[in-house]
Image (cartoon, rainbow, N blue to C red; front, side, top):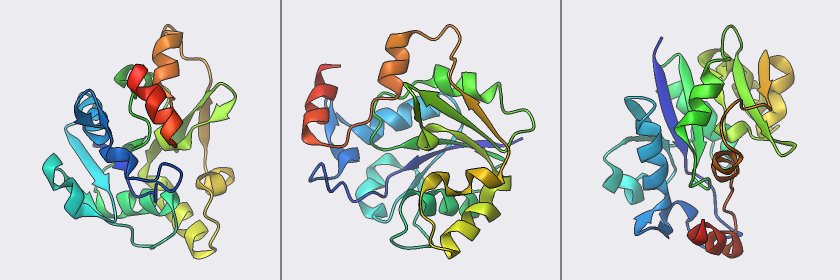
Length: 192
């Protein structure tokens, strides 16, 4: 079974006012922190972006959306279309403190499910979930119908939701699920 990590970096960053993934934390772009963490999980890490030229410094393979202007669902579709893996660990570029222990924990529950999706603090987090290739056709159907919410295809697949993270500390979980969408959250990230 081939497992790959995918960093979704295609958003417009309208609330932040600048590209979130290139903001610096500890002298490094946010995307570099995410990539380094994903590299502890899989040998293959890919970036899905519609601006590949700005990420050449990462040295990673990149793919653009095939369905332009359709948001993160199109990013997922592009990953499943281009990358010949069986399982995909997904990371969003605005979650700078993702932690390998959370993904390792989720992966234990994959079994025969199509996806394992974490729920933290009553919020479902599909963009730090784990998916099998089998969801690809369902995502394509939603894109063709222009139903663009990431969760739009969830009723059509077999999902394991995880809201209990065993012995992983609350501090690790709080950081892992921290989402940085606006300047105030960026300032907060610098102090975490």
